[in-house]
Image 1: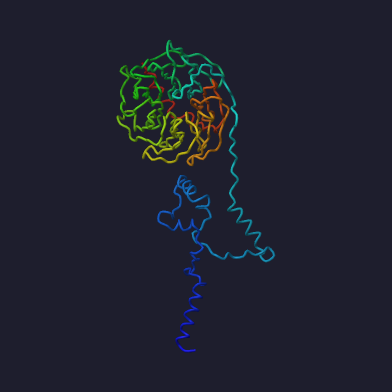
Image 2: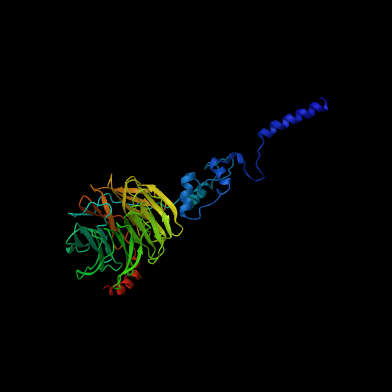
Length: 436
């Protein structure tokens, strides 16, 4: 064999050996064992660990349930063979210690009631998507609007008494003050009345709107009202000239949803499919205008334990439940509710939210936060749900419906005592004594 033939033979042999050779780095397993998820993790901006619960949910939705759990970028192609018990006397000790350290504790089962704990008749309740006929005070009194009348139901004693009856028109929305002593009443004629519930007398009659009242919200001594005239009015109930702010030209249609968070940030929803975030009660222009929805936004509620998180729900043409970061105006998550959203409440202990729905199923839906994965549907109403009201401790939810019933659901765990009797219970009381 000459030198050239030997060199060619050695070269071909080297090529064959190279095909079977392991191309891994020293002490690093072969990258040929890298899965598709592993390849994604090696790319830019993909090789990260979740910094919070939202990032973890996002990673699992995009990459799968095993995306960041027990998923290695690189792994050995040939796994070591585990010895049998007869060959390894330490296996039992190893297995027991390993299982006890890694085996997760069984989570307590979440029991969601499938039937209401109480049902009350509400004859004369108006089937109107834009109305808010029920509100639950911090003193455990439920105000219910039945056409032109308002009744007060004591949830503890079960007693009911009539508060008022309008001479004309209907009651369209109700909202208690934070301390639960005074009730604001919106009417179809555009007036806002303030009543002392315990004395059963009217304190003030606030005029100024050019259409029916669609929503009310309190922040200390300031009462915000939204109307069919597409305006939001700010009323200081301590002074005779109550109108301290008039927000016109922002919403293009009926303002049907209002809610304050603990810091005084206001969220407003309208029939123009828009949600506006106002930084304070005296802001003249919105901080953000959210246009994700494609139908009227009546249902909106601030998260009680995440102060800048807002939940919103759209009407029939939209049917979306959305979570927002109100500080940045960023959409955090959305889900298809499959029917119009008429009300939202949050759990005070569980990281969940409950939504009320209209056509076609007329159900309540329980969602996990922040993934908006549906946990359960609660059915029983035969007509569209109009709104939701929550008990002072957060455990009970009252749903009002066009089927002329109020149903009480034990959905959440009761909040702690300091949450029920917070510091905001005494401050507004001294201010509201000056209503005139």
